[in-house]
Image (cartoon, rainbow, N blue to C red; front, side, top):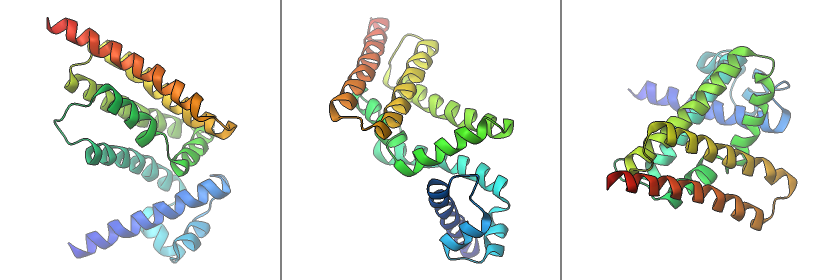
Length: 199
């Protein structure tokens, strides 16, 4: 049991180092040796726990989704419906307001243009995020159908991702606030539709 815990800690340490290297040097220039140096571990140990760089990319994508799910569980306990504002804040802050994660995702998008396997994994990541948002909407009773919830969830994610992207262009507080208001309006309309359905 203790050995498994050490293994998990090592993987976490290596993934954190991998993220730092990807944001700093770009995915194309990130090597196992650079990751090993950043993690202050022997290269052989990095390869033992994670494998080659391609395997590291797969593990990283999985870890990003697990992190998002853990953040949701910590902030919003299971079984407790989210308000429209809480849902918008989760998407804009928990999912998309992390410079390190956004830097890694940008690199993955570039790689996905050339690598069909990474493209498929990245699509799966966003699909899982969308499904989690749809689940939260259903729990709160938003919308009349799953189709309506999926449509709004997709719109929310698009606004959240766009908001994060515009940060690099010196986005102002007023612009961010305006985007969040648009997102909130979408969710509140969906909430109202669900309430009508109950009557």
